[in-house]
Length: 196
Image (cartoon, rainbow, N blue to C red):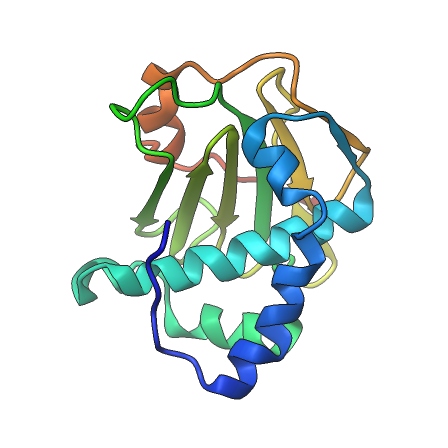
């Protein structure tokens, strides 16, 4: 929870990256603690940007060979856009708050994939803090005029990037802990595109 990485300049750290933190400050504690709130499209966009930034920074807490799962270009794109791209999907999941110290309060996993059905490299990053599970799924670049088909809404998982309908929190069902590994590290990514 207290890990710090010193890989960005002070201007970015206290500037746009701090603005991403400020964008979620008023609702992030409710997500982590499983308290009631509603995320509109603006809040979902802020959460997706913050989640992407946080997942990218978490990569620097790992060995270089693990860090290489996410290409350097994705860091540059976040710097320029300040939000996920059209080649990314985000989803928000709910888990019951850890009952004791046997389960970590904060956990992050990132899985890289070789060539997918869409062609090119893809990755999936999962961040769990308390009751909140956020995922960013990166597909190969999507052709102009197309977008990724969103994941189906489930009782324990909702699409959040690109923003759709409001999300009422906490979700109606929790992700069972025994399914977290399959969720965070799927054997393959089933990604499709549609005209956008």
